[in-house]
Image (tube, one colour):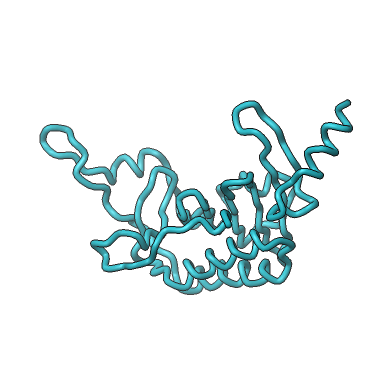
Length: 192
């Protein structure tokens, strides 16, 4: 019975998920698929379902089973299609305390603003991430993968490594803030 259920999960994967993805089923999240793309000495780690994808582009780590997506110490980025957000990892230390120190409150204790990321990326670091994405594009198996990698490449092309926003989990590229004069629209390239 377990073998039939596993075969059923693999054979029912959405078309945008490659055939070699590993399904994992839970009551809370339904079926989540994971897979990795080895790109030279780098790795692109995927986790997705029908509606969203999370992609880790790891510049200095090889794919090592499903653990590649969990490595916050590796340099690179994480892209979330749900929020159309790129979050950078491994280029500087980041903790909840660092983030808390960037939150500005008024005299009544109400949130006023969150200060920008105190760190920056060099153009060389951005080029390294872009090179991994470009190489991964040559190894895509589905249109969904291709759309997402093209979106990451498009976002990296307009990333100013010195103007990053702060978030709970690290520094991110935020081209959606109208006060910055940026006009990029949010999209979810994983959904057709």
